[in-house]
Length: 141
Image (cartoon, rainbow, N blue to C red):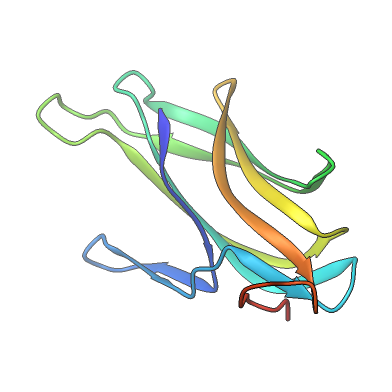
């Protein structure tokens, strides 16, 4: 199993044809001060499973801050179906809306996905204080 896609964005949705629409992808946030609060954002990830991973699989997503502490945790589960060898491997597409996320301090925050005893790396965000950034970034709401 591995992470096939991992991003943070403003909005995402599945279409009836099985494709995913994603809008407003970002990697950096600028805040007027800390702690900072992001009113809304969406974590999007696709996990591609191995052929023997079918069944109910629990997962946990942690947002880990620059000090190694956990700023946010989401627990859930997914059902992984059996696939024939001539078909693509099973995949779980997660669209996780996150509201009122608190970032205690500036620095890099990384989403970690824990499933079946393994830790998979998700996307990261870099938080900066307003006036200290050297490139444009999305401001927390």
